[in-house]
Amino acid sequence: MARAILTGLLKPGVEVDGGIRATNRSQAKADELSATDGVTAWATESDADANRKAIDGAAIVVVAVKPHMVPDLLTEIADALAPGTLVISVAAGVTMATFESLLPETVRVIRSMPNTPATVGQAVTGLSAGTRSTDDDLALAEALFGTVGEVLVVPEEQLDALSSISGSGPAYVFYLIEQLTETAVAKGFTAEQAATIVQGTFRGATSLLAASGESPTELRRRVTSPKGTTERAIGVLEKAGLAEIFTEATDAAVARSRELAAPAE
Image 1 (cartoon, helix red, strand yellow):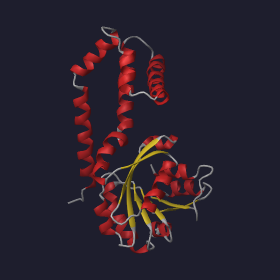
Image 2: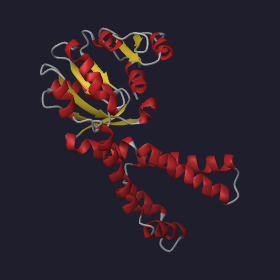
Image 3: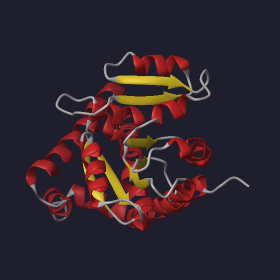
Image 4: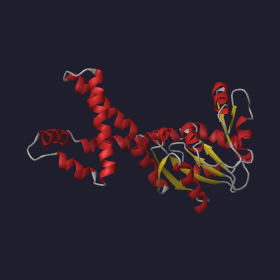
């Protein structure tokens, strides 16, 4: 996700005052990042001060590490952050309270939750303001994530729920494509034919939804002729309780997000 955000910041027309600094555990990956114009990177495996060097004097610091790694990282860099620094979290489930309790009062925090289509500039990112952040901070975060897709500002209490839909959502879509592809193969199509049929159908349907301005409900209604084949198929999905399954699945994602963010005992 950090690489996706970096890609957005490196787009033509996007200006980043002072350049971009990054860290990675691996020296090889740090070297790869440093080979990118406008980026300087350090490896924590070979430089114990890498994280502190990267954030020295920075106006914006993006924290994109595993949730359980956040407390140690914040403790490490807290006293090196300049007053007025904006820290943006990309760590799923880690609350604003955790960030603000571990950082100086002069540091502002915003939580974000982008998704993997950020890598192709088609992200949906949720943003939540912290208790110390300003409207200007929020606008800056919106501009940052606007380089990789759409941005939605929500209260923090909705961010985990948003993540269970948009953050995990691409996996749900890929899973549906995977299953429908296997169904097509079982009906006698080759793997290549099945991929063409299913992936083309998903691309076409989402493109139609985006271009038409109609709701998915209306578009589904137009495809579903009374007493027709699609109506029969939709009936099977409804009988299986697909709506309830999605509710249960997203509830499980929210619960797991909170588990991952919980401090280790």
